[in-house]
Amino acid sequence: MLLLTLAFGALAVLLTWDFVRKRQRAATLERSKISGPLSLPVLGNGLQALDLGAENIVDWVEESFRLYGKTFRMWILGESLIYTKDLKYFEAILGSTTLLQKGQLYKFLRPFLNDGLLLSVGKKWHARRKVFTNAFHFNVLGHYVDIMDRQAAVMVEKLRGVADGETTVDMLPYVSLAALDVITEAAMGVQVNAQSDSEFPYVQALKSVVYIQSDRMFRFLQRYDWLFRLTCPVLRSKLLKDVRVMHDFTDKVIRERRAAVEQAKADGSYRPLSLGDPEVGRKSQMALLDILLQATIEGQPLSDADIREEVDTFMFEGDDTTSSGVSFALYAIARHPQVQARIYRELLQVLGRDPSTPVTQAKLQELKYLDCVIRETLRLYPAVPAVGRYTSKEIQIGGQTIPAHTSIYLVLYFAHREAEFFPDPLAFKPERFLDRADSEDRETFAYLPFSAGPKNCIGQKFAMLEMKALVSKVLRYYELLPRGPEVKPMMNFILRSSSGMNVGLRPRRSS
Ligand code: HEM
Image 1 (cartoon, protein in one colour):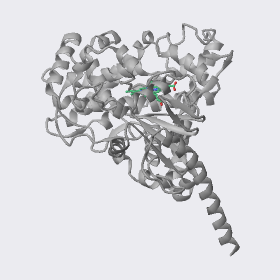
Image 2: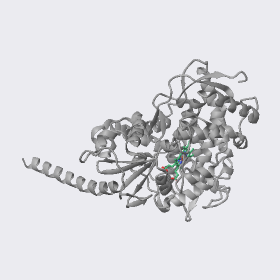
Image 3: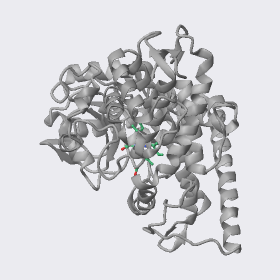
Image 4: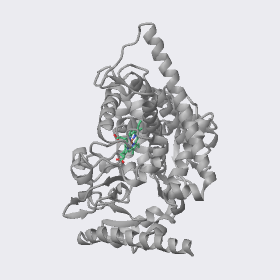
């Protein structure tokens, strides 16, 4: 009896707390005319939104924009969320130098990325961002293009077995392993040969962790750590085991590279690099890890733990994003023969007839039309479909008041499909970027595949080079054909397609 009374008492307190908290925030949102679906006490919209499954989120968000306008709100267990495609929000949030904290959903990245560049804020983020800004300077990316070209060559060989003109090929698994090989070598300076050995434990663990954590975002019973622990103990222990595999591998590589630096110190060939040193990133063959090992912040070297979170961040950011971009591009090109013909003409003109001739950074830069094709791909299929920020204080945006403790998600996917900025928005038309000035997009915030402001994508130049290197190599060897079902875009951290990203491949006569 006592237990029952206590349980009822606790429930009453919970309901009252939820009611008061929600009433205050709801009143603010109502005054600002931000509406959203009806919500249950305590659970809010948890059951509606989180049992949709990742493959239905795009349709659900689209329908919500249709019903509630360019900005709508949700409640999940007292958590307040806003989804928007209104560019005045984009401008206010991404233009801010103080609103840098990520939205609540990013907590799913924390177990494996810890407090790396993507998730960190404040002094720590600022100092590290400076170190990496030099490392990603356009002038120092040439070395990475060699890695990209080599791995692209492996990928086209792997594709040979399915390039019969008939087979429907989902490009993502091929591209994803190639991108993983590129980023592992670029970030850590080691070759895992994922394309030849996809069973390599690190490769398996990274894929599994990303899959489990993306899926959890949309499952109510897994969304909160305490519920996940209770309801999915087996999955949770798999997650922890995989994270350990990843961290053990990164730790091992860091130890070995550090030993090499120590050796260099011993034989007198080592010269420490400090923040802002023009040598950072300039030395050829330098992996991002080497830059971290040699950099100092306020005179102090980074610890192994500091370095690991940054390397893991690059591994995550550098693999899934570019493989999404490349696979959607190949899919779109396969379905637009005139676009494909125009790219191919450009490839012959700039790179010549022999498809095995390696590309260079300068040659990739000359591929202007391919550049437009990739930009158009990232418009319709932005690899990062939404970016989120959390405000701990009440803020005003364009005359609307956002309550404190709200996560605001800027839905790039739908902002990029607004007819006002992109006439005939659903059509794949790379030509629209031929005479579109970057400055126009920066001013209007209408096109932001790499986000904007202080926490924009630091790897965007690297990513554009990689996407061009992989797409151009495939097209130099194969003609792409429309095969298999159309894409069905699916949002998790990274944009995917629940129906695959399918093409057919036919070897070109010259290859
Ligand atoms: C198509 C490819 C890519 C796209 C579309 C993309 C997009 C983005 C976006 C939208 C953000 C901002 C996220 C946010 O504000 O929440 C971001 C951040 C970031 N990206 Fe990328 N990215 C790509 C490739 C890469 C690559 C190849 C790397 C590294 C090699 C990279 C490293 C990072 C890092 C470290 C951040 C965090 C920056 C910070 O917070 O200071 N990205 N990316």
